[in-house]
Length: 100
Image (cartoon, rainbow, N blue to C red):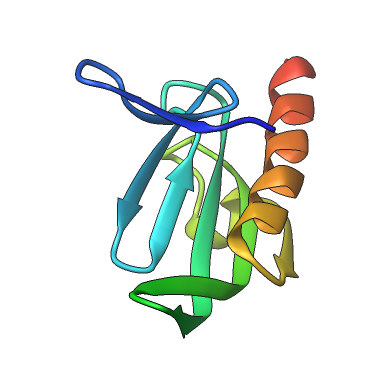
């Protein structure tokens, strides 16, 4: 199982791609690449002292700033749980970046 890594210089990383979170949005990938994944946590539940994502919407997006936001979306989906969404998003991102 892959783990989320953190180093002082690089920040959070999952399966070789950077992760950045702002409130309920998670950006996966590098803006320097042609594609990124944008995830939005839609629902959460409390598990002991931890708030856990139960429903996550995610999109594969172009990073081209000249495109309108609706034209940046390549594909989108919704999954139950953050790790399920992250695993599908990883496949999408890796395939999109490999097709350069």
